[in-house]
Length: 390
Image 1 (spheres, one colour):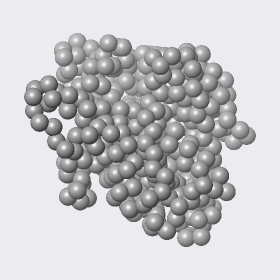
Image 2 (image 1 turned 90 degrees about the vertical axis):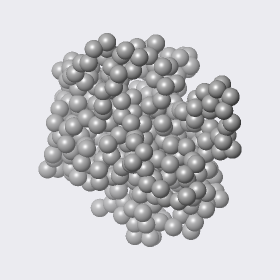
Image 3 (image 1 turned 135 degrees about the horizontal axis):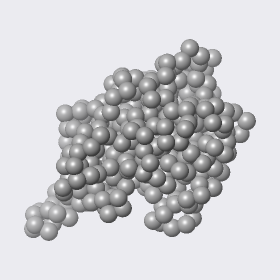
């Protein structure tokens, strides 16, 4: 029995729910803002405090990644209309940075001789991401936080699919959350010269931009994934089917990926099987090697201009471990609304491929979408999401 998606929730730069995210994807407008950082101009996608809804007083002391995650979870549960306590429900949350922002803040406060809050340890702990959902919903099943770099969102979905289809659980709350726009992360990336930065302001570069770099953003996304039999029994509205997932590791270095892209190709091959996607939602950051791998994979499996390839990174930035959830949710939205999100990029013709530079409204249905993701240190993730019920 297949795993199906019955609910979704999201928060990111310039959008606080699925309705707002849908508008962003349709409008061909970047949510990224330029800011000066140590003499450089970089593009960031921040989630501002006014976007966060206070669901309870208990959450006032919780970290920003947890609060973003709970807000997205609340929206996903409401859409799914499921009582998760009625089923064998697991919680799996991916994150690249985990509690890094809070660790950084605590370290600075400690160096200044300030007394740390009793909530500090909990907010540092990456496991607080999954345990916060478990506590909020009062569910006592499997609860895992995956710190697996920028593929974490797909990794969480992959594990959920395995557990559901092996009948170990009935339902899984699949999430990802990252507070990426913080000093430690930005300063860590600057020496690698992979952030979009110049000494003077310049036009925004995005996916497939010939190595100009990526825009860092933050946010959270949540999916309700359940056994198709259970979804049908409770007459749930099925947003999409998790047709296939695959994850691989380049096994080259914790600091590098395999420039040949062979193991990304393997992940894609396992997801394709005999089914071609209507379009591809590519990670495509604007990092030269990353974009080169993506294009190499597509040339291996698809004919030029046969299938549209898009990347939403120029629109919403790269939210680290939450990015695959942004991509998957964008794919689900596109399936229900029959459009392909635009690729916002300055050098769109660089690889002579079929990029929709404006939102493509389609008369025909979108049958399935292929989603790809890479992670620092050689992680590769791929998922095939198909349309829901008949």
